Figure (cartoon, one colour):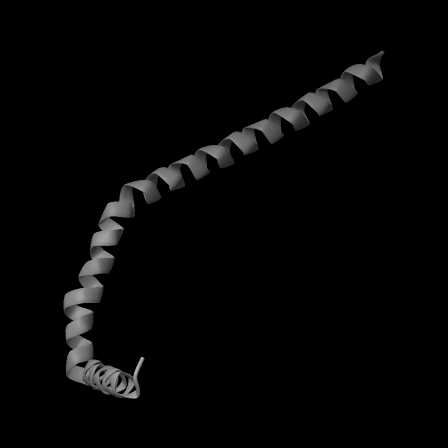
Length: 84
């Protein structure tokens, strides 16, 4: 790239950065680009978040039930062996 192109590119980038970092433009970017994007993404992902939470809760309940059954079975086997 020639030095003129580099200089022009740097000047353009510096101008864009200066414009973006003004408080007024930061507010516009936040209001019209970032917030709607996050809202849209969250709305699209919300069913998957709920599904993941439900599956996690079911696994947790299943684990608790399995641990309870294992402890109960182990306790029952120890009682049964002590009578023999």
